[in-house]
Image 1 (spheres, rainbow, N blue to C red):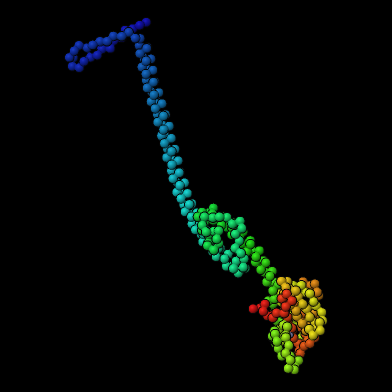
Image 2: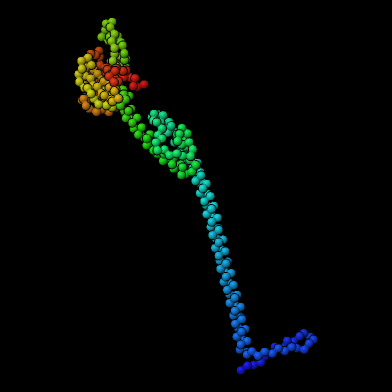
Amino acid sequence: MRKRYSVIIVPPENEKTPRQIEFTITGKKILLAAAALFLFAVSLLSVANIIQAAYIKEAQQKIAYNDALEKEIAAKKLEIERLNEMTALINADLQAIAAYETEINSVLDVETPTSGAPELSRGSSDRQEAPVAASLDEAAVHVASYTRSMKEIYSASLAFNETLRHLPTVYPVKNGVLSSGYGYRSNPFGGRTSEFHDGVDYSCPYGSPVYAAAAGTVVFSSYEGGFGYKVSIDHGNGIVTYYAHNSRNLVQPGDIVDKGELIAYSGNSGRSTGPHLHFGASVNGASVNPLSFYD
Ligand SMILES: [Zn+2]
């Protein structure tokens, strides 16, 4: 059933007669339309709110992310400063190592190892100059290079030690007094003749311990004419030492003796004017002053 409705527009102060607009829509439809319009408006507002909230949330997340990034950048800056300080410290150490390397090489008479040494940015191929690492990566390469270098120095020091072990540097008697030097001297048995004294004499009490001047192999241990009881030791590199006029020899040919090892007791055997040790040496078969090794 259709009803007629009127909307009456009343002008102010009764200037004109009121106007009446009539329409024929049902009341139910008006209500529905108004409700629909209202709901539509409300839902529009809700959607706008949701979108706005999403934007705000996103913006807040971006701000938080930026804050975190700034903190991270600050921390990284500190880290970079620390790494730079470390690089400076390592450079100082590298220079100290380079200085020691030069000193050690000159002491051991080692050629500066360059085999396999990496090419680096500044003056490292020539070890005369201390290396400078521009970065920790480079410092690591320098350190690796020095590790190889230290290995070679260690090998050289072992060889040096071995050479030293076989050089006569230990005095054969501890309580002896040098009583006759090396070379020509007047005949100790009298007369006007002179003789070549092939060694040095240490006056010492009968039975004093006699020690090997260096490591080596015993090549003679027996009685030999004027020398009496005599021990000869081959130290390698052509060097031989011998110890004569002993009262008793304690080693046999073929024995390997260490530097400073007890090899005999001193005495007065052979052509001797009193208890003493005769200490002689030769290099490649030629007589030398044994004390020349001790200088
Ligand atoms: Zn002598």
